[in-house]
Amino acid sequence: MGFLDFCSRDDRDKKLKRKQLKTVEIKVRMDCEGCERKVKKSVEGMKGVTNVEVDPKQHKLTVTGYVDPNKVLQRVRHHTGKKADFWPYVPYDVVPHPYAPGAYDKKAPPGYVRNVLDEPEPPPLARASSFEVKTVSAFSDENPNACVVM
Image 1: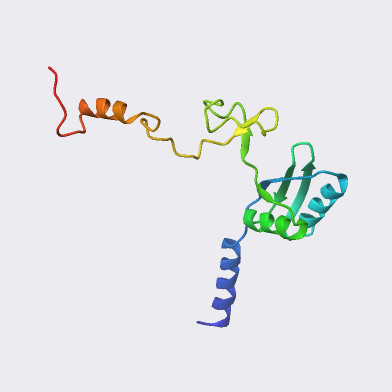
Image 2: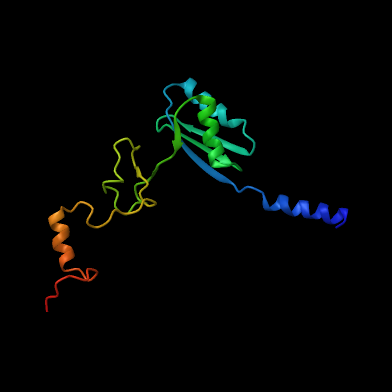
């Protein structure tokens, strides 16, 4: 392997490692203008950040750029000393059942509900009493000792 092969291989590896443009939304508690400035300045200096928007009413920080979401979150936590999490809400129209027990959240901003699309559904008999479970499973096709009514 010659020097030119080594150089050309290095360029190929750099192209594969390029990051994609991402939008990271973070929920951070901001009480005053000083908090807003502190949160905004914590991520403005990051390499790859192209745009930073702060919405103090919703306690939301939006960062756009060629960045890793976990690094942005860690930087906000470290530089501000505040509790920060990824934005847990989605628009009301996206969720099929917005008033399901897991989706509705009183703390959500207007027009938003908690994102329950990624969460697994509870089993169908999760809230059933033991009597109901026995009754339903007695006539189940999956139960080998079930009764057969014909």
